[in-house]
Image (cartoon, rainbow over all chains, first blue to last red):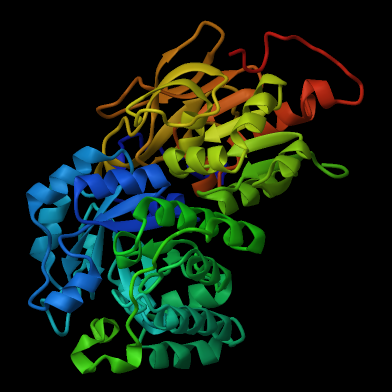
Amino acid sequence: MSEQSDTRTPDTTPATGTDRVKRGMAEQLKGGVIMDVVTPEQARVAEDAGAVAVMALERVPADIRVQGGIARMSDPDMIDGIIAAVSIPVMAKARIGHFVEARVLQSLGVDYIDESEVLSPADEAHHIVKSDFTVPFVCGATDLGEALRRIAEGAAMIRSKGEAGTGNVVEATRHMRSIRAGIRALTTLDDTELFVAAKELRAPHDLVVEVARTGKLPVVLFTAGGIATPADAAMMMQLGAEGVFVGSGIFKSGDPAQRAAAIVAATTFHDDPDVIAKVSRGLGEAMVGINISTLTGSEHFATRGW
Amino acid sequence: MTGRGPTVGVLALQGDVREHLAALASVGAVGVPVRRPAELAAVQGLVLPGGESTTIGLVAARTGLLEPLRAAVRAGLPVYGSCAGMVMLADRVVGAPAGQHTIGGLDVTVRRNAFGRQVDSFESTVEVDGVPGGPLHAVFIRAPWVEQAGAGVQVLGRVVAGPAAGRIVAVRQGRLVATSFHPELTGDTRVHDLFVQIVREHPGRDDRRADGADDGASEGGVR
């Protein structure tokens, strides 16, 4: 390698917004918990509990479900307030396809943008071309094909969608199992079969080949949507998540600071039932859950995204 | 490379642990994740990975690992920290929330998130003293820099170009090494090779080594 590079003058100009810088940022979040917050005070509670990042939004998904209406990008003043309040990275959500909301969030200096199905979609066919941005993006996915389509558009991190705002982990489990099973299936295929797999996954062939060869996504895979307890977080880690988003589960519960710290500990020690048992004591009430089967068509956030 | 290499732990509370384990393996060390005091006691060197230093410090403090980590550094365990690991090793941290838990031992003042927010994260080349084979391609992610280094600290590398040119991004003090950047993300294992050489020369803590050799109390962290 060094022999080949001897002929070139090393490029010393700092390069921002590269794939390595965007994906590398997500690598630093691994093994951590990213928490939804709606105020600077909540952001500080999250940081003190050990969150690796906070997601700044105006309403947590549980409230979006109750209150209805169009859910949009948050107020810039609110995002500024949260950025000023903490030293950890601040993420914020843009509507699916709303590339101007994303430009605004980049201009505000957020560290990661979530192109999120939790907000009302702004485009029913197209997602944001995320490779055009300096700021990295995370996107939701329900299966491997959806994950690879988002990566092709430039997503630097994937989260399983789950069903946000329900406190019910069943959809997160389904999506994580689906993504992981899809990856495992690819590793057994030969070169000819991978062309068909790419067609069936509706994903670019080069990404399909890369996943088949490495046995993993080319970006970090987190879980999201319905995680409400330390045991939920630990189960998702054991199912192959590299980290956890917790939305309504913390600040809609009885004792947010303690529950947040407990979920952080259970994520690190996800394979140690003694630790999970210890941190699960005395947490007060978990958020009230919703049975997914009672949701009607448009109430399923996970079906948003194409 | 003959025989089994030294056992080097990677603090595995949060962060890019897997990349460091892979880099250690490729330079002939046996990398093991460390989450508990008993696991820490079994290693001959330790890597503090990239991640969020507030999270790593809090989890270490709550699980009773922070004091054993401090004791290990005082006792001369070789330690290498990248990015958040540099923050964890620093005696003084600027830009941190009040009461942030760190390990300390490295006589430097480090500024967290010194280069700016994620949109300012970058890759560039860095010359590192003691690393042969020309400049390293370095990845800086919400990285810290060394604002001030004590007399016993050797400056190994600085930013070459751009708005932060001249900033200190690689240092060594005895058996402690720290970089602002992430060599574990590039596949260039020369920094890990440098660190594992230090571990080979000084495996484990001075107070637990079988031969009882004491080659200088000035090395390691004096707090």
